[in-house]
Figure 1: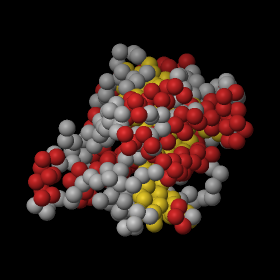
Figure 2 (figure 1 turned 180 degrees about the vertical axis):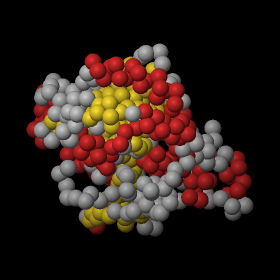
Figure 3 (figure 1 turned 45 degrees about the vertical axis):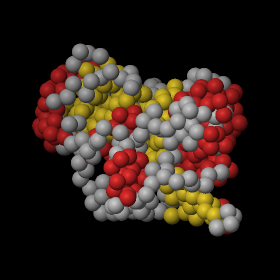
Length: 462
């Protein structure tokens, strides 16, 4: 991994967070080796904690409230596993009841300077990771540094825990007591300053910049999200203008991602918006999303939804997918307005396991146009395309439901356990929710062994 990024996030599961918090709450220091898988896009990286290898009790030579001495048998055997799996290895230890802001001590610096070369050599990586944890008033606090062979050190920006809820803890968050601007005063009154800070630090991807995607993007930007990646290969056509937020007839023919990017920057000039005019089914576009904490699926193609499912499982992202279906009778009268919001998170089924993806159509969408036309004429591929009914009121309704689910996962105002899908039947004024477990052995099954030999475990066709 080439360390060209300027910040990084450590991504935990809820079980990993709880284990670290329990260790940090002990009266003596505790050590472990962390094995992390890096996902990098631009200037930011996400390190997915794949495994915590705790130092066995017999390897502690000295273990007190403020000091550790460990035999090499307590960590060296764990480093070969990192090399085999292509992971970064790091040293983790706790500071019980650390006074003041948690930070690396002078002794920690000495230990890291000794361990760094060994960890890099045995793990076959260019980087060495050092993470410290403590608890203060029952709250877990962590700091981390990533150091390269050249001596460059990059501080950890945040810790993200993804499970039934979404938790984002910023570096030195305990010092952030108020929001700098009164721009968000109404929101802070609703859900508090810490959530507002977290919204500002979230990195969000949006796949599809049409009726639902543009509505999601506008709401997130007005909520305070300041880092957005937009992915869409299409240009704006005249019929899109009735639904795409920020668009006008003069924008027809322009790439949707550029129209939406410019609109978001008018709302928030301080935002960082990356416009990717490409399909998520191409590795270049999907990799741009890999450093996001949350991804919204606002595309109507089946092949794209397969990639969204893989992002949730492999890159441990909260992925919120949505769709709108309007049906009419022969007289042109609406007889069905159906919306769906599906939340993919650890322990919940992906879109494939839920049968929300037509695999035959997904395969057809990946074919070159000429080949698909030939196979369709011969009856070997489904027909694609066609004009689907779409109305801004209903695309906005579903987009609002999706954004509200993100807020609920951060705030926690709803009932638990949380459902992972919301179905809207606007024509009947009905809403229902459900949850579904992964199919055993599928890549979204937390107990399944994933193919990590390629990006997101798939063969890419560019």
